[in-house]
Image 1 (cartoon, rainbow, N blue to C red):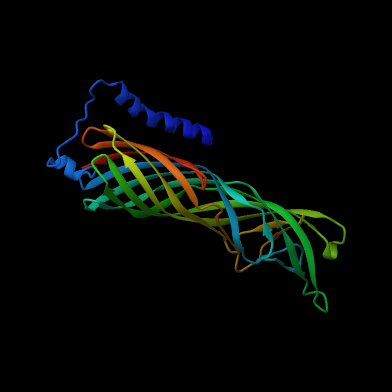
Image 2: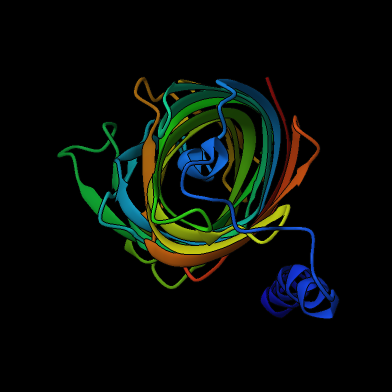
Length: 325
């Protein structure tokens, strides 16, 4: 997938260069220093713009930040806690799609702010965990605490959710043809989900016996992402290719709904979770720094389209169309 994105972007970026080389005289002329167009450089005098952004994330690796204590029921009259030191295997965002409307306003000739609002769809790859379960039975005198080994996996069925955010863009003209830029953005989205956890338990009062069970519950995923990106661009006719590097941080908060879980202990008995706290799992992006490459194409005085690919910290592509006025 990475190679395909790179080949498509490389081909698009080469098109304007080939066109200029094949043209005898070209359509662009070097403007005099007194020409207003050169003084403005690449900065558009239009203050407002409306865009539709389509953002596709094909892969982003995540790692566990924390896992809170989770209270579940395995048998009548027992209180069980899935220990917070349980180890989650590395997870990843398998796919994520965002479509947002963006409104941008130029405060100054080289500084713009923007807001975004839209919908998002996300799929998280099934993940596994390893840990222990502390079991206390109040009916036994004296109370005893048994430690049970536990392994299993999570599978999420996630609904679409709203995404919103904003940021700013700063440009500096090096010359008429070259420009440096800095872009900052923050996005937040929320998703309801239904999850299934399948676990195998052994040890403690079970001895060498291994039992399995399915736990199904509702919850909410909150995804927050921010980045700062710097880039350099060059104007080639109506095309503006650019490349740069960004630092990004994406975090996921997984919060189960209180009392929303049912547990099948593998012996034909189904219990309802009596937890009054639910549980909270937190994940953060495994990689933070990555390059990107893109192309702007101006169509007339008001329209612009953009294609961009991002790599290393994530494998992603963005396409958008903008109307300036």
